[in-house]
Image (cartoon, rainbow, N blue to C red; front, top):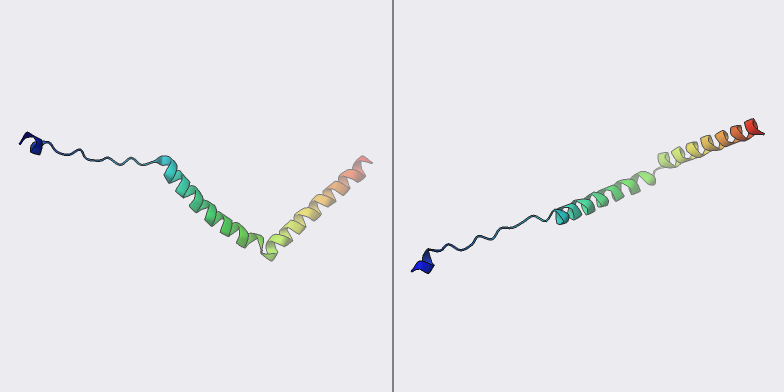
Amino acid sequence: MAEEMIPEKAQVSVIDPFQVWKRMYFAFEDSLTKTMRDSVTTDSFANSLDWILNSYLQYLKLQKDFVA
C-alpha cells in the first residue's frame, strides 16, 4: 500500500541548445544559399562586377602613371 502512494518521477526533458542551434543554422544556410544563387545569376550583378573591375583597373592605371 505504501508503494501505491509514491508518485512516479516525472521525466524532465532538457532542451539541447546545440541541436536548436544546428537546426537554426541549417535552415538559415538553406535560405541564404537560395537567396545568393538568385542574386548572383542576375544581369545587374554581372554589370555591377564589371563596373567594379573597370573602376579598379582605372585606379591601378592612374596609380601606375602617377608613380612612373
